[in-house]
Image 1: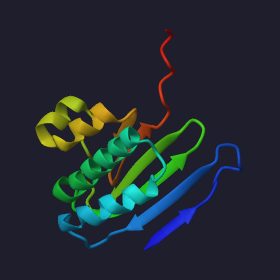
Image 2: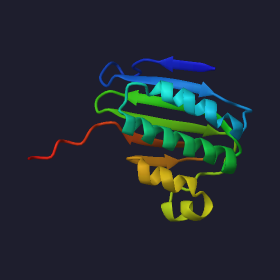
Image 3: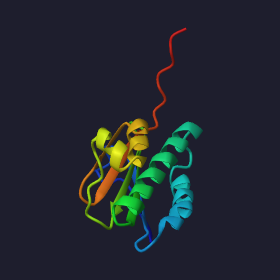
Image 4: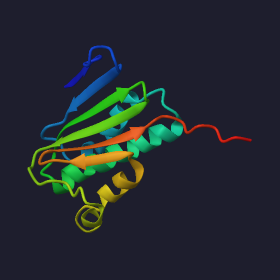
Length: 141
């Protein structure tokens, strides 16, 4: 089931929330998830799209392999400042490794998330990451 909502915060910071429910799916569903995420971030630069796809794929893979399966993936796009937040809700209650040194041993896919995302974290059932889609300021000539 796909859902979306518009602003959600009184119009102050426009955002778009897209949700894909995948309860009961297997890691074989990663390819359709990637296609859905690519459509959700249409219009971003190629570099930012690649970062979002990489992080979404790693969070979903982590949910399937280490956290009891993936139930929901959510994309939250904000315009100002431009950012994309990826959230995954997992079937299990094992927390993701929010410490990068522990992630390297227990969940190496999260090392990629930590290196790519502006910020990331995890709770008992939800892991998230934020990707900035702001271009850096032009360097002076």
